[in-house]
Amino acid sequence: MLSVTEARRRVLARFQPVSTESLPLSECGQRVLAHDIAASEDLPLFDNSSMDGFALRAVDTLDADSSRITLRVIADIPAGLDPHISLEMGETARIMTGSPILLGADAVIPVEDTDFHHREAGSPAPKTITINRSVKPGEFVRPRGMDVRKGEPILNKGRRLKPQDVGLLAMLGVPNVQVYRKPRVALLSSGDELLEVDAPLESGKIRDSNSYTLAALIEDAGAEVIRLGVARDNLKAVERIFDKATRYHANLILSSAGMSVGAFDFVKEFIEAHGKLDFWRVNMRPGKPLAFGEYRGIQFIGLPGNPVSAFVGFEVFVREAIGRLAGLEMTVRPRVRVRLAEQIESDGRESYLRAVVLEDKDGLVAHLTGHQGSGNLLSLVRANALLIIPAGVKCVPAMQGIDAWLL
Ligand code: AMP
Ligand code: MG
Image 1: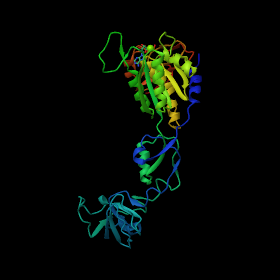
Image 2: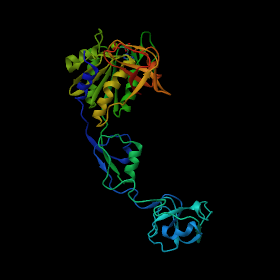
Image 3: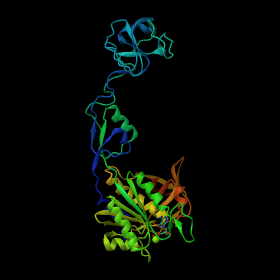
Image 4: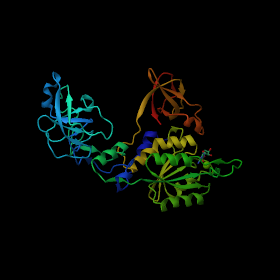
């Protein structure tokens, strides 16, 4: 049986980024950047004040530590206004946070450090101010280019744009951005036992929960979901639903259940007969009956039917595959090292166990969230991590360190 590492290698080798599109900046949050971006301007754009106060010439304040000095206020500069005048000896100008530093000035004294105490909104500037401390050149001035230099690389291709990234692009006046299109994932469930969530319950039937979990995971991974519904347990029904996926031009077909050797596992039978099946079992727990193949040129991943197995299969294979399609540069989930609170038995397969990881004085410690049956979705709901027990390991004693994915 294939190891997780080998199965993942085979899957990922088959996914390349989709094409790109140009979007208005307002629609680019969370989208993946399709090219490197360098700064088109300096930031800040001009020398400006970092305080509400008075712009002045530092040399005029040299004696202020021993005697009070008085400066004449020649202008009042609100944010957004460039006065196009310059300061001469003994002069100052009232200035607001973000206002341009006027010519001749090289420092700002905060209003709190002057004798001007009328600071409420709307109060007019005084005729003069008195100060009793010297000011160093550059004090409370944010010089042009101190944050970002024109031409400096700022965002790399393959990065999912964060809120602060789109903010920075707005500062630089970038109205449109070339991003990767959202990959399209066609999602289906399979099984005669499955009911819609709002259908009356019938004896022997269960609700189709996987399509909800998986649709949310697909969106979280940055793709668009095409919900194909449930394929009943017969070849015709499976064929109909796979053909629907081709009409929607999906980049990936994702199914759950029907992949094993049960008498009613028609998904596997269908792909073997009408598509290409690369593998259909992986040496892992939960999630052994996991398939990879192709149908009419569309990659296909068949997840197991049990709800926790479907989730784990998604995290181990599908999230990274969607990341590749989406053009993401960094697709690997970071691992953290945690300490086990209790001894854990395993069966030698690579195992993913549901746990709560908490921080104590010695670092991160993990407790299992209940029995690890692959239908026990509540134990996944209560977990905030998956512990990864490597292949070949049958017992991990309490207190030992182990890798985990934080969910
Ligand atoms: P199968 O792979 O078809 O043998 O299904 C394995 C287990 O997963 C069975 O207990 C199914 O009832 C269950 N199962 C299959 N599909 C779903 C689904 N969409 N939602 C919830 N449980 C499912
Ligand atoms: Mg089934």
